[in-house]
Image 1 (cartoon, rainbow, N blue to C red):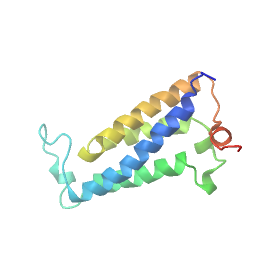
Image 2 (cartoon, one colour; image 1 turned 135 degrees about the vertical axis):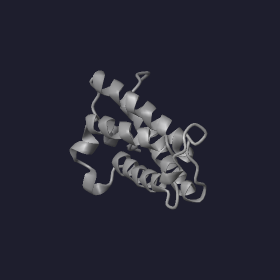
Image 3 (cartoon, rainbow, N blue to C red; image 1 turned 180 degrees about the horizontal axis):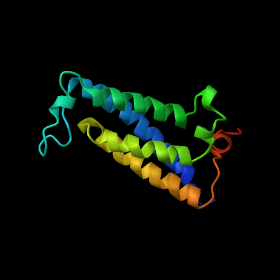
Length: 136
């Protein structure tokens, strides 16, 4: 008791980021706006089709598939280790910043990446499947 389990905290933040990523990607289909639109004009990537909306929606679903995990991913290296998550979430958060609706999920995902890095440096193991299930 009283000990911070970084990987469980990072998992919950990643789940939140994944849900917000999907919702932000869906909203981006209707409201096309870049985060850096006042600084530089990158409207060519948003018109006539918003590529960032598709990328953010798909990556949000990938995050949810990794963090929940899906049955066919349950015992794979992608789910049981922290290193693939760290290497996957950094580019996802970088790409998500360009879409205005996905700035917050990008920040959440970057924070979760730092927390997974802390968990791996402290030597934690992925005990999510055993500890989150109630024994009652």
